[in-house]
Length: 396
Image 1 (cartoon, rainbow, N blue to C red):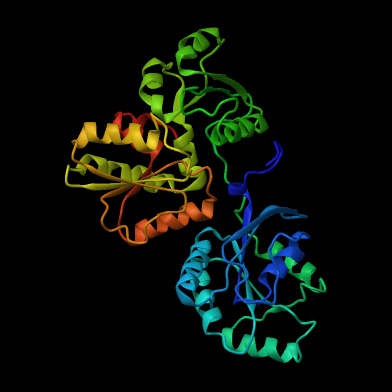
Image 2 (cartoon, helix red, strand yellow):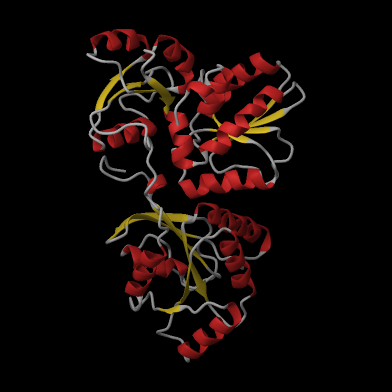
């Protein structure tokens, strides 16, 4: 990724679904103008999710996801199908490819996509070698209540129709979310406190910090940054108190105790709770911490799959805070990356990271799963603020 690239998590996620050998890989190559997906006449060539980022005129940066066929067979086939179904959770727009005159799999996928309120663009590929394409399209419309676009990925026929359909299906609120929302406006002074400890990557800032700084600059705010130890000195150097202080959640208590009364306080994690997820559900769910006992079970979910660090917030610091409050016997499970249980009922509470590496659709799908199973879910920053007794003083 270059310095000017949009992070994948902020791109429109467009996923291709279809049977084996329905032309998904050929279509993704045609849409991106590159041979990124292996194409073969042998069914089942795509064995895992393949992603390719590109810019589409009038739409912006997109991430195309090629999936294995949903009619795969055998033990490995079942695993591939599970990967395909998991891709639904992060999909903003779906391209559903039809292949023949039996549509049981297509109807199943279509129902799942509609259940998740995901816009669907139906496609009938390979019209360069099919006969009676219009009749087949009419039959698909009759059986599935949706009429496909007629295209040939090989001949580049109908590709522009798909691009136009993507533009028409674009969610109205896509890309409209703001990290800092209404907390600051032009000329407001904002102080960002960013500890450069063992968890900070060498020579660079982490993604939430970079994205927040960029948004503040776009809003024409006055942006000042410092480390935790230089917080008091930085305040003394300023001509006026900051309108807003954004800190790393790990030092919430320290910054809260030292900040000017006039300055509002939040954290990167709390801001991303609203940017990526449902901040109100997170705040409501944090109250459950008060009712946890040593027999409770908590799930901590981390989006990143980095190697554990000695003072890792998800694996070390947050569990330490929870056990100090509730008791050493509190059971805490940890998952990372796309590993997230389907069955959440064993848990009394889920605590998620800020999810800067996930797109908003994927985070909301996790929240929806928790809601459906009546499991409270919060995030790192909100939980730490609650554990420090200052959640009601935090802005979001």
